[in-house]
Amino acid sequence: MILALHRATHATLHALQARLADLDLTASEINALANLADGRARSVGELAADTATRPTTLTSVLDRLVRRGYVERRLDPADRRSFLVSLTEDGQPAADAARAAMRDLELAALAGITSSDLAGFSAVIHAITEVSQ
Image (cartoon, rainbow, N blue to C red; front, side, top):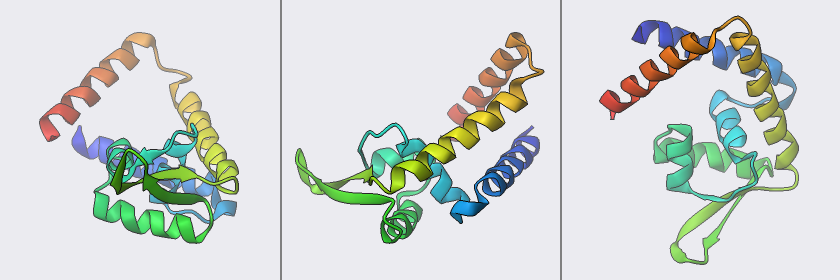
């Protein structure tokens, strides 16, 4: 099951990169932007948890997105030792496109799936996540 999930993950990443080829984003950049698409600023740690990315890896992803003008880091007023990450005005369209591509892919994948199949899949994903932490 783990290998099948791994294959599905890579197929998903390739499909997303193909759908968003005009944006020239890596899978990690797509993931970060899609998570930020809701417009809510997050700490680096929170975004790392949301994207299931190690903070050190996320730092280089964010560096690239900052250079492209898609995200910004600013000091957290509640904790001046940490930063909040948020989309810029230029980043919002790319984030919206990433989120839409994910939504479209998900809708296509779930078109032939029953609600009980989906519930079973969700239970398996939850169990794998729990034992992996």
